[in-house]
Length: 408
Image (cartoon, rainbow, N blue to C red; front, side, top):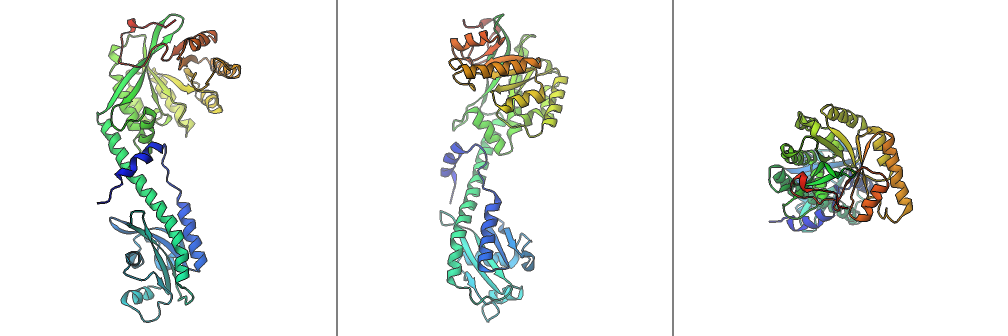
């Protein structure tokens, strides 16, 4: 039995978002073929488990009943052509012919041309057809040959979509398994008050044990691809909240969520009664589709006692826009975004500008990504009061606060 499994992993390793080409490409190919051959309508039939599905129609399809996605006799005729049972070219259906030709003529088809869509494995994926209401004696095999390259391009797209659907299924099953309680671990990284040498928060970070290995950002991106992004993020939040009872009263628990999850009613429900121990970090990497909805969500989270942070802040316009619109309680300045910040005066000035901008709206500044002694010294010179990074403490199981201190 044919399976797409061997093809999935190379696609999964390179895909970050769905790679499906727009339907307009297929529509343009159909319209090009229809116009070039002088057909009244052109249509594409996809062969699926439930039968023949008319996916696209160009031209005067209503004349032939083609808006009906079932397609009727025309769709079944397309399958017979693709399977080699019926000829792909019929220039004059008014003349005596077989039963199928007479039926098509009585349904208003005077001429038709049809080419099967063959996949790379030899399977017939569908057919690309043109129909005219009047006979067209000049139609010949050259016209049929003209359609084949167009049909090959459409077949490639259909096969790509099929591969994407199978990849979605495999990814969805894998992510649903994690949501069901398998393969997710939470580790914690301390955030320090650099002046007092005290832990003021722990950031909860997701780690996935399921094979094949994927980094956490890839897991969450794939979950978003298959419509499970909010579910996976909330699963990670609930797993992190299990450590709340072990936190001292003056130490908060921070976790990352996308703007979409932050604006969900489910997150507010989960944090009901524990918000005053929480920092909700909004990731910089995900776009904000609706700032009004996100601002309303931020207001609701603050109403629970939670603090709101802009995470991974870099130096681009989107960072300043997000800070200006949301007025977060905390801005986490990512030293890894501004690479070579220690040795580059220009980059150092950009980071300093970001710090000044955040301070002007009374947001607390946290330096994250501190990985060397020189970066820690720079953070102190810039008078950034809080810090986080592998130089101060690596992510791991929930530790005792008394065991931690700032590395000097």
